[in-house]
Length: 528
Image (cartoon, rainbow, N blue to C red):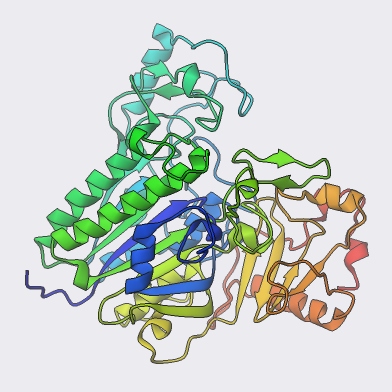
């Protein structure tokens, strides 16, 4: 069909917990094959040095949609909790909000996990007491009183969700492995949850928490639903002259590890996570096919990215010293590739991600970029695409990728700040990376264990010669340590890492977080 759109459509396919080494276009020696992502790589550009802003879920989603580091907000560590309040401030400009100003229709389909305004008391009717990953023996029966409370609560509109943060349309779930177990369309639940999630769906890499669910709820329906919804949306929008932004934050390959029958065992690795990576890639292929069938592929920018690295707990075992080995590694597959660590860590395995982009006529097919890029860069990239300058109060940590794609202009990013699940900071500047903790900053090698093992309080790596972060050079280069600490402090104090007027962080920011290091006092860090 003929197009009179001034700007390209944008499809952002955002997977959950997929490691750098899980993409076969980035890790040809890996045992998992991702043919549809590989196809995108052949037709577009691979980024070999792409990073999420955090090593866990919610913070990275915040940065994608705002172009701002999460630690400038109230979220200083961890993720948005079950039934949590909205994290994105109502007056903050988001990517979809910005694109709407320039004629885009915007839609989100999949996992939100940025908080919503649930109007009820979060007591045991909505969140029964439960220990993570401890499967209850029996189903919990809902009482008439509980069902009545659920009817009252879930009949109300949800505030602070996607349609209040720039999206015209939303269909998804808040968090797939936490309640409520139901779909949400725009600002309403699709139906009223009326029973507790069955015990068979709790624990064992399925749901983590009990709570209200729709009857016959099951997790295998999620990926096919996102694929069908995306296809219908693309078909509808292809008939209009208005460009669209389709944000597809997948619920996979994160838990729940509920794999549809045709994909079980398809990886050949005796591992449901590996099978779910393949099913996720298949859904991506269906989205690419929809763009082709509906005649918009040549006018659409497609970006594939992950929110952080692969989780160590996918069948992992602990070695007695606070470190873990993935169940996939003994089978010859390394989800983090050659990089150290896993999801939650400040080491690169926690935040170095698969990232591929295709834009026919702009991005040269089969190209590779070794430039340092970050998930927060979407905001500035969209502004560059439409030829607009962002307000000083938006996209404070966002750099346009357009010069890398079209080969014109100057690419401006030289540094990026990393953040772990426990709020530990690291900063990358060129070949150098400084980690402000003695361990991984996350789950792989907890800092308390690292202190116990007598490791230094800081880590300095030359990633050019040591991409696996095996040789701590902080003693050999104390001036570089101080230089990078000063750079991080400046980016914190300026409220931004890009040129522009100083901004204010939402809360005070402590780059050291010594409260999580047993026996370590701020005075011990004076040399830095």
